[in-house]
Image (cartoon, rainbow, N blue to C red; front, top):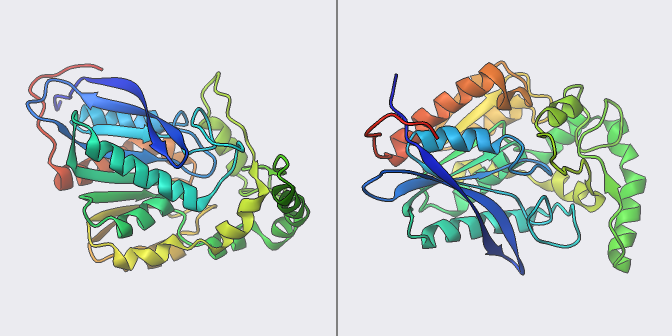
Length: 310
């Protein structure tokens, strides 16, 4: 059995915009020099408590420092109004996370990778194209095309979002509290995700005692439909690993694979597990093995000197 690093997890935060992002920093112990660092960001409305810690722990055991953060307006990060999903602000949060790890003295800010899942996987594609100084990127079941995802949602469910979207746009104009739509709901229901596995899949990721809110300000709907981060794949000059679900009900795999094949230094792994299965059980084990192997090749973390447990 391969020896693994012990590690320490720290509660940290870093400035983004006019507020902050809350995060966990994992630092492997007993290294002669600071470790390369992987930045983890989650999907639609999700917070770092929803299984980002599982991936972070495995990466830390492999000798990586890890920064797992929650976007502004969600969880225990700052930002008002709450539950506001702004693509531009989330991308700015990624930029702020990169700046933060580059400025730290306890990690190697010259060897940085980004890792995103679902909507965060789309952000990882965008960020990798914008930051050629990064060493690597991982896009897990990535959101790559808003139009393709809208088709997967279905025209009837999409039309049902219209009235609440209108109410939220009026609320925004008046400075009132946002009108909310569910992130995940039962099939046919108005929500950002309503595939059969969406609601139970989301609920399975929420640990007991977490104050997760299954809702988001409706004003995000038109911006999601127009967000097509897959188009940036062809501009990525660093190595990037795409982990794609063959049965993905939220981010259609055919379109994702078309984009992934345009990345000059892209690698593609496909899995039969569904979109929400990636975080648990054997699908998680397969993913984290493949991702650790890829990231080890690209970032060269120090070998463990002795076996240990976190």
